[in-house]
Image 1 (spheres, rainbow, N blue to C red):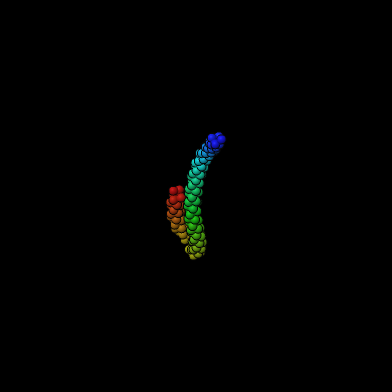
Image 2 (image 1 turned 90 degrees about the horizontal axis):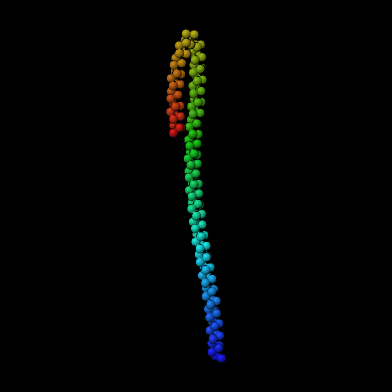
Length: 144
């Protein structure tokens, strides 16, 4: 009877150990699968992090370019304002010259007019040449 009890207990313990061993194998396999899943997720995270960093660098570069464009626009706007001011000054000069011319015509008569026109024509030719050179230089600066 004792022998049978010991044998039954031993058989029960063997079955229990066998079941535990089966559970251990299942858990081990599950752990291996989860470790692979974890490695896969780590790879995905690294890939997404790389894409994120690449996108951030791209956006930073775009912001820099936009900032440079903004600075260029401000510089051109300032230049435009200066040129507009120059135009106003030139228009005032033209008005003064016309007034001066009108007073000289009244004073000197027709011979004086021809002399005045020739002198003024020569001055205007020089001014046109100067402004043409200036425009050429400025256009060269903008092409660069």
